[in-house]
Image (cartoon, rainbow, N blue to C red):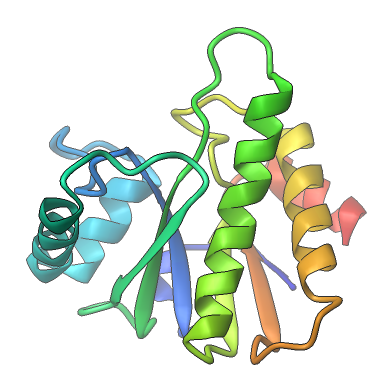
Length: 173
């Protein structure tokens, strides 16, 4: 399913937040990135839970993994956190693999928690500069492959905030 709008208003079991490796949200005041938007809408409790997760882990979160927190003030019950690849120059095979791993890790964790609906925005296409067409193709291909195996997940929402992404996902879905 494709949806264009504010992901923080979705009443899914979980929304996905592509974080920096500290998982603590963006620290630039009033910055318009989606990470900052999600942390602001969820409330300070989200940043506090992420802080405790990272303190227990003792090291930055690597790209391609996922963590689960409560949604706090969001309509979504949970937030799935993942760190997408940061593109510096050309996209590499490793970047592609890490992006696919982000989607897979979020879906695996959601299924392990028996969640039924997950909303993704376009991971790594903003501040992390993954090209939109390639990122969309990887996202759709990875999700479709995951859904070939029965799990609790019934609904996947691709939140396409930008018009370019809406057009890409319209053609891919």
